[in-house]
Length: 140
Image (cartoon, rainbow, N blue to C red):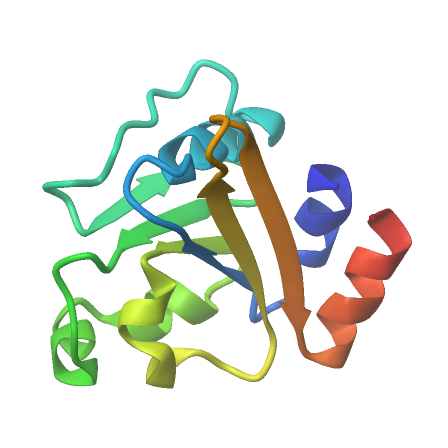
């Protein structure tokens, strides 16, 4: 799936992926695996962005990771230059995407992470927009 997504992310507007899930659901682990799967990502140090709202990784295509846990308004998102971060080529991985839903475009992918009562991780991929629905259908 990462290879198909990586090719699609080379389009001028890139791909925005919203990560949702409770604390401890595996968002950081998902990002670690995602970055590691891209060219140039092996060995990159990916940590929880608790104190840094934005992190960027020099993968091919590039990955920008945003943590919206402490952001709750569009005005706060404007202060960090969200449009450029969301819509540049490559990937924008947005943790706590549900915090500012008004900032999401028509085309984006939602990945919901959860832990069931027996400590099993669950991942639900929901593409929004026709291009990403087709992409997920081809690679999923």
